[in-house]
Image (cartoon, rainbow, N blue to C red; front, side, top):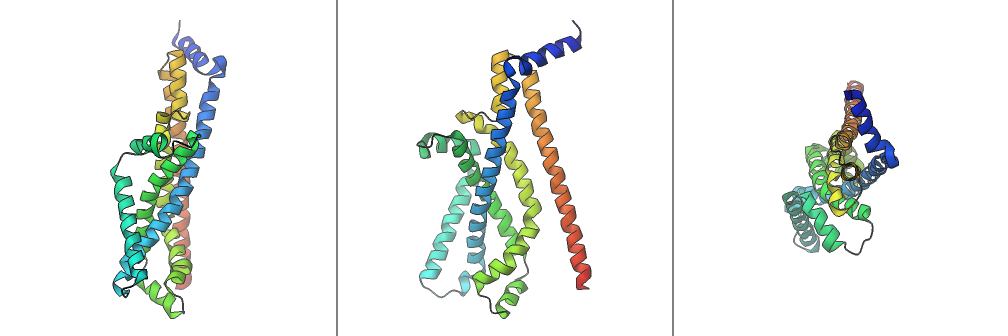
Length: 248
């Protein structure tokens, strides 16, 4: 039997027989759902944490003793604790804790995975956004105040829009990293892309074909999103050049 015949038989066994290709398609769908949901959760958490931490660093010394100062310090403490715990423990352990202990009442594994990966991603998004906020020139804060804006209004209308423009490529790269991290969702029985390949392997006793197929799907996705990120960065650079030329 030739190599082509062996390859054809293995391909048919792994993907054609019993419509096993549907495992890959279904797993891919679950992976995308978990990734997108987790990214949205992570962005919301990250922005809130970043604003609290950057606000604490910027104005805590200027605040008079009182409830506002107390709550800001308490919020900063909680945010630092969150960042320490989330970034200091493996995401697979966090997933197991959420699935078997904290969110044991939630029946959908996809929901648990989305929440877990979202909380995990939020810690990294927070540092990305905080770095973007802290990189904005302090003169922007002074300009906002000279226009009659308070601190909150200055953050909302001046600082945050500039921050998003600066950190958008980094957030896109976080999405790519998150996509690959979700490959551990199978630890709690979720049929994601990686688990789909493992199911086919277990049913056909063929490891090479399904696992290579899963790796290729991940590779195609990463290449696709990496190119989108590269195009996004290119557009942002062009926009900065145009705005710089207009300013001149």
